[in-house]
Image 1 (cartoon, one colour):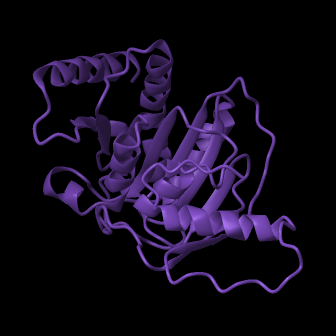
Image 2 (cartoon, helix red, strand yellow):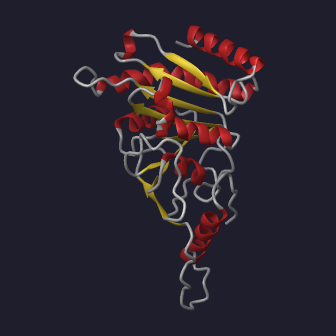
Image 3 (cartoon, helix red, strand yellow):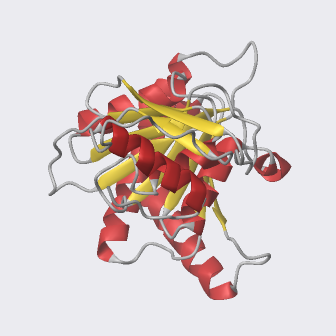
Length: 270
């Protein structure tokens, strides 16, 4: 298997390849050598046929693979029937893991059952999930058209984005050269309810559609990720969309292009 190293450590990819080779019967029957004391990955590989005419979307989040926000979004994307939907998300809640990774430890990835999608759950952080998902080790494709992190429970605006594992997943995709969205629902205790995620999906789907459409046209803003904040009571409040850059200060051209795109998308597609 060929793996592409998009921010994933060489040791991690190398050891993953060893695991896959042995599971495919690549060993000669001799005793397995002990792995070196470096980061390694154990993984169950799940292969599904996909319609190559459809764009590939990779979904992750900070709250964990079983969270209602991710499940609701993935179900809606699958139902649309427009995309090949893949998931690589943390096994457990990593919502405040920020941009942390897991060096020097074993990262386990195993297939997960999400109807209509090819999914893996990973024992590491959201950033580990994106690094592994884009490495070429889990999925047959080389690069998705878009990475979506969400729908994450809780606000990720202002200073909160620095703590957010969900935002970090989108940022890691941008570092690897893949357009990305991070989507969060401003959840409020004793006020929000699970059905708000259904409304949140309805609000963000047009933005996802517009993003993929304009990526294919080559007119989506370059060098930035979009942070989508869905308000409490999504159906009756306005969505906030903020461009995020890897630079300390976004250049004026990128800022203008992103602002124009956001304005058009919010006024046209919602």
